[in-house]
Length: 301
Ligand code: CUA
Image (cartoon, rainbow, N blue to C red; front, top):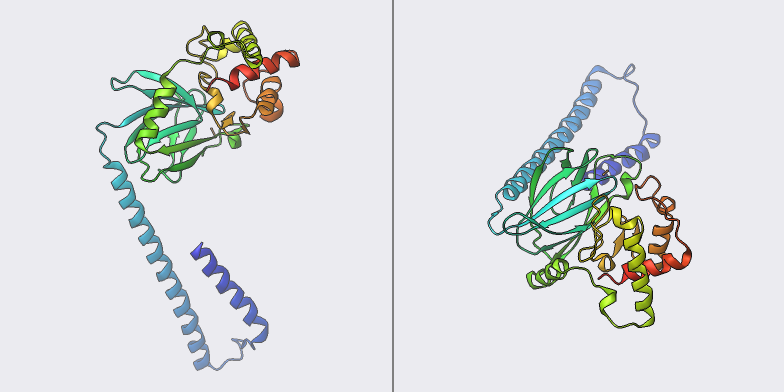
């Protein structure tokens, strides 16, 4: 921004001065004045070049130092996450201490503040790029190959991530959030994610619960269960995001829409209108059935 502003200011000064100044015609200038004129111009060009070079070298040095400290993060007791990019969403599998997947989330990651996180990156279809500008530089996610980066959030907060490699139609709608929580809040989140999904059949039978139970039955008997997993039920599909705790997420479809009942209903009935090209097919369910599904899924916190 500073460099951009400096260039614009220099340009504006030149534009303002040009019409007001009698520019001497070099053909009519005495030789001495011409030499002086050229010398001044050369000095300006030289000074500006040196300044640019110094700025660029300083930035390069800062970049290298940041890179070095990132690569030296201690990785013992690190949190391990396997990220798989797909057209156009993110699957994040959290691994236990022995490296076995414990649970999966999509597009909403949580990490503990001050603790390094090893993120393994891969892709199932085309090249995507993992990019959370406030935590690390970009890193490609390549089909059939696994790369790795180590991140560490020093401050609590939510860091936005984006896919930074054009990966098809919905590349622009491929976002995710990394929420950096204090360690105890992170531990609570992790324990909640490890638990299987809430089962509406086990609770009482209030009005909403009747809907949720009907929604669950629909979910398990329709095509939803062929693509999505809800741990604790028979739904174990792996093509789409794991929905075990989908009700607790802030956004749907990789940051496309807020996770509200109306948006969820719109997403289920016609995903193509919100995210054309998404692999989720439109459903042929009646509005009443969609409402039941939304109540069930919204309750999966
Ligand atoms: Cu994935 Cu762009």
